Length: 191
Image (cartoon, rainbow, N blue to C red; front, top):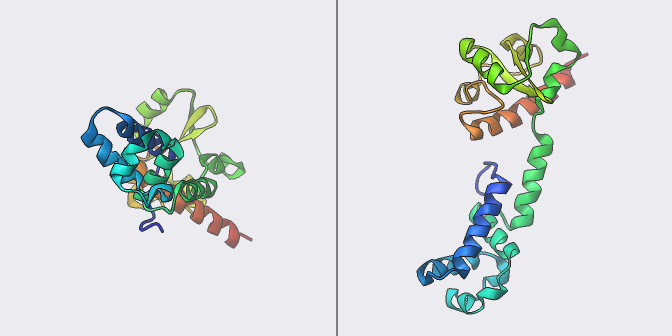
C-alpha cells in the first residue's frame, strides 16, 4: 500500500524500469546482483534469491521491472501505480476551465508563444500564466479568486505562477488537485 500521497510520474518510472532491466542484463556483476535484489520486489520473483534471478535473468521481463519500480514507490504493483496515476489525471485541474464565459469579465493577455507570455509574466510577476489549447494566457488573481481558487496558496509561488513550466512540478501537482477540488466546491455552492 502507498505510504504517501505524492504523484509518481509514469514516464520516469518506465525509464527507471528499463534501466533496472539493463543493469540486470549488463556485464557488471555487482550492478546485476543489485538489480536482481530489486527485481525480487516484483511478486513473480519474490521467492527467488538474487543469485537465482541472475541465473534466470533472460526470463525477467520489462513488466517485472515495472512492478519492482512501482513497489519501490510504495504501490502494490505497476497496475496499482498506473491506476492511481490515471485517477489523478482525471481528477486534475484543466486550465481551460478558467477561461469560459465568466473569464470575459476580466482582462486576460493572450499569446501565441510561450516565450512571449513568459516575458510578460517576468515583467508582471503577480499574474498567472496558463496554457489554453495552442496558446498561452496571463490573468490576474481576480479571475482565479472569482472562481473560488485560493491564490494565497504558497504553491503558486513555488511554481513561479507558471503552470506551463513550473519551477516545482510537485507543487503544481498539489495545486492541480487543490484547484480541482476548489472549482468543484465553488460549482456546488453556486445558485
